[in-house]
Length: 205
Image 1 (tube, rainbow, N blue to C red):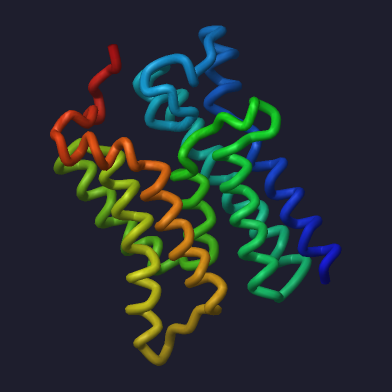
Image 2: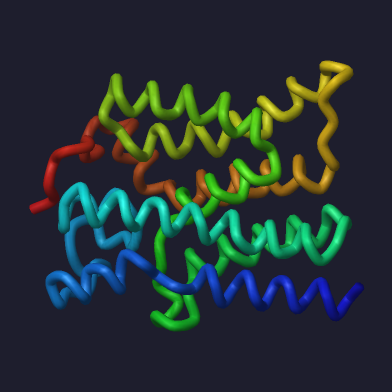
């Protein structure tokens, strides 16, 4: 069990450390995405710097980084803690990638993949609200924060109903990811409160 646990974490971390935004930016424009736009190695900054096509590609690949490790972990073990380790390893890898000097993104898309795999309906409900907020305000950071914060709340609400039950390990992970997301977005929160946050479609100088 211990060997499997750490093997899953290592596999997930190494997979999560593949920074698709960095690789695609290097391929297309020979630039380091972390020195352009907001400096974040993620789909939103890829949209600002490279456009819609590369951004959608990065988004889907980053989501897949959250899904694949958990699917593998579920095939290897029925233990929820192993599934949680897989998801957490992928997110940590995305945020602090070993291949790229431990400078990665904020883990939003990979967290979406993790939560959608472990807590599908709560993640879906939270995702609808998050997307609605982005459409109305054009603040991607606000939508990301709403998704992270609302997913554990939605999971707890779903568990009130008799037909829904989730392992507590999944709930604890969703709470931890919400806290991590707020911390990773702390500068965005400051800009949202001061009204200086960049909106979707606005390019950084």
